[in-house]
Length: 74
Image (cartoon, rainbow, N blue to C red; front, side, top):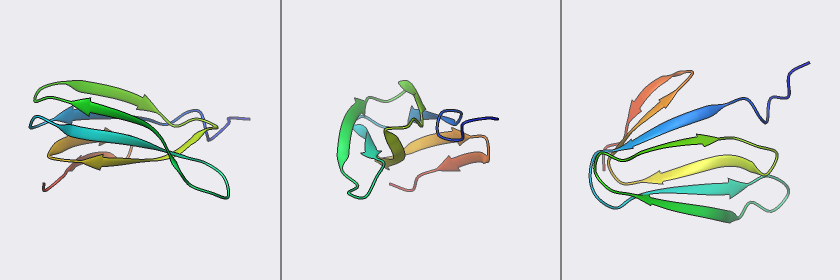
């Protein structure tokens, strides 16, 4: 049986300098646990894990997931 917490990846491509990717913890208290800052053209491949339940992206970026491609507005 697959573990749904460890199989999903996202790809974030920065469309401007200063894009932030923030990892949020899993559990009863959701907290920020990791932040990456990307400059224009940089790519980050991130994985959801037992510790990471969500990611917040600030800035203009293209996000690729198994569900499709999403462009942020700002």
